[in-house]
Length: 315
Picture 1 (cartoon, rainbow, N blue to C red):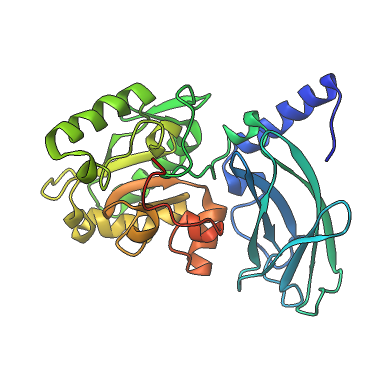
Picture 2: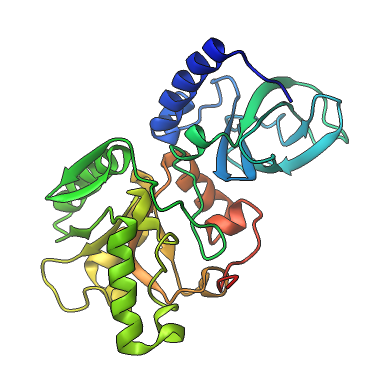
């Protein structure tokens, strides 16, 4: 564990915050891995006590395995890379601290031959966590009531974190080109807004039922500004499970990943997330991670980050 002086810490915080404010694909210098590009390694905080180290080896046949070690040389994680050369290694890091780790990428020999070695900083410091596009929000990992995106833009009147806004404009342009009628209905919601919405559902259906389709205040992805709910201008199945069978739902299922979005709540991951399928609920994670999820076949952020299922609240 290392501690920086005040002025150095401020400069480092500004630099890292700027990096994390970019789409993940931009943070690793390019949208698509290339066999000729040098391997890249970076770390992203996902909860107050958890970081994931991301490895992108660029589809090199001789780089198939990654091992992560702490400053003492102890192995703290390892992964086998996907066919496209990507891998994730989750790490436990104490709240509001930072830790240097060394990542060695090589072949499948145990340990891998040190073809590539990188040192990265894994941090759970609050300033970085709050800007992480990979932040996991589920029924076990809430947000603070005051958390909100630092930069907000509106897309067709719907407020979003600026990174999600840029990606959504690209997605809508692509939908227009394919003559798919699609628009965002809800984006950023404050803690207070979610409180009022959730309470109205509890009054109508009871708490147990409401918990299957609405997040409690502080537990909603909408509070990050990285999520939007989609509707189709043709109407019909808006905000219903049958939305997935419409042209708009099919388009999102097939094309959202290319803009850095994922359908967060699916029928397949209901037991992990605790929510009914919502084919209209899109979460921005950046093109790097959406590509990894597709390559690896992981069905949820929890699966990708080796987190336990969160089908219910602790209280």
